[in-house]
View (cartoon, rainbow, N blue to C red):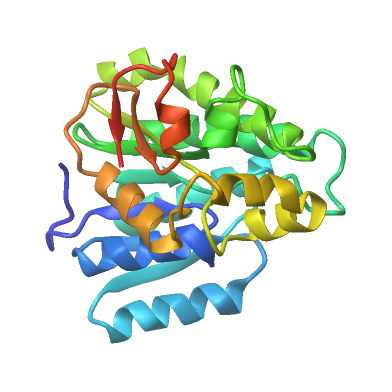
Length: 258
């Protein structure tokens, strides 16, 4: 895996000012990477996280950008490359669409279009041995064959569309020597998505809890961090939690249970 002259990989994590993205940044920084914490609006939160990482002996910086905006996305990649010369790992963690003020079509704009656009912008700067990691949920990943919680349909459809669009680029990734891994998790305890779903359809969350303990943010973030170094076939999927989903045949390529 490519590294900086100081031995640190440059890892850009989208939507990293809180939740899974923030915890992934902590894990990777503790392992010796330099993490670029992307945020859309919460600059202070991102700066606080970067300061916490630095205080713990890690290396981090912040980069504000709305990845759903083409100009902002391009500026994000340009800024990272201008500062560090390249990008070693892109973690596609940002997602949305359940927000009350979300415009019609916003979920697809963010969860599919923005993901593929940012990937295409980043790809020329990823060296051989670089890695792209797409973060998703079982509710989206398995949506073609499993019932989706009421109210979550726009997210599930758009996240699955984003995953499919990225999988269609696997040949290009491989030709450049860049790895591509998907990390899919059951509902993650303590995340904003679960809290929003609990407001809209508490029975859907209860049904998932009835299947067993939900993965924690720490569990899932560790799996995402691990995926940046796993030696796996292109398009490999790492699963975290949700054993009932995994008990049935799935359509994804090679898989691993997390």
